[in-house]
View 1 (tube, rainbow, N blue to C red):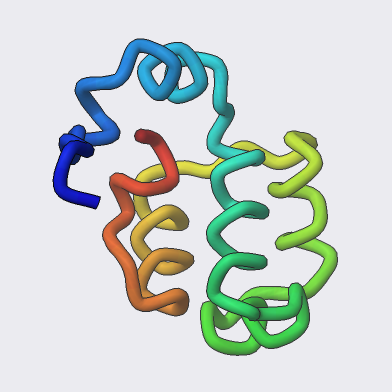
View 2: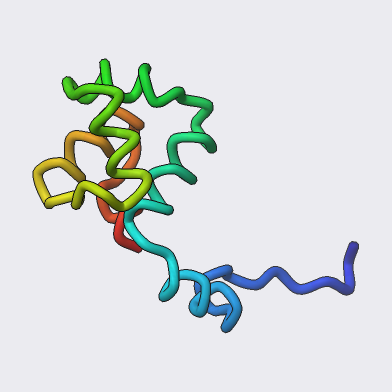
Length: 84
């Protein structure tokens, strides 16, 4: 459609609002499901237990910097995607 203009998502106010409200736990679950990965598969790739992945996704276990790197590497993405 020639009359439509592409807009960078990060320049969108709605996106910035959602980004500010999204927790690392929510980001982890969203990334994991987006990449079609189960909790068990992510746990195996990251060298942790499925229970740990579950606890992190529920916000019961904090996601530190080192763990963020492990999880992101296991998902094939940047650790920054967990913290927006």
